[in-house]
Length: 349
Image (cartoon, rainbow, N blue to C red; front, side):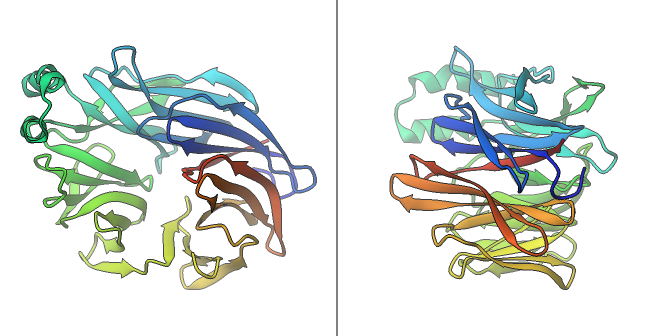
């Protein structure tokens, strides 16, 4: 990757319910521009974007003509769009892909798959005729959702591997060394029996903590996992000692791809980036509308993605660049929605 000031590709996606816009932002501080790639792609229940070997890979949850959820993908080489390779899926349906670069340099995709077991086939046949919530819940309690994975080799995805063999995979993240999974032995949708697991990329359970109420993982690194609870609170869970520290509601916390910790204060609009105990950057973001932000390291500085609602029906999405001296706005994009779920990847050019 070249140092700051050279050209690079910066891809931002904003998820607006069923309407998604993919943006290519040329993040040269001297000459920034935005190109709209598509604005009519449904990203359904989840997507993932990553830079790998100079390309931006985007995998997302789509829908087959039959209505079953499937995983699709595209690859961007600059602004040129190509169809992405896919694993040999073999389930009733797949959703919520996550792509991550492992510590050995390989690209791995993990996702939630509904295997063609006898009980899952029976559920698929019966839920179409079940109208009462109680009947649906009885059926869904027997549903199996596995966490599955595949590794990209020479441009082709390898065999599909089951990282779990029973129960229901609810949410997951990875730091490249381990996979962190929110798991339920039996689906309840009340999340009262959730287990937070630390797995190897082959599926071996390293640690398991029973923590009721977890509905999601927002970030993870080196055994530290930021989890989101059903009641709206967040906590930092230490898989090594089992402790859980509540995160104030005014803070967003996460980890960058190289292990730096960041905090975004939604009241003060200050983004703090920390390396160990040393503060690397303490940045006042330029708009009062931002209620979310996170950094991506680039060269000696950071690309910062910031967004938030301006009105109930409008939102602001920004790409900023911190060059260790000043904060530069690369692009502002006004969206016709206040519901924004952006993702970003930097592919050096």
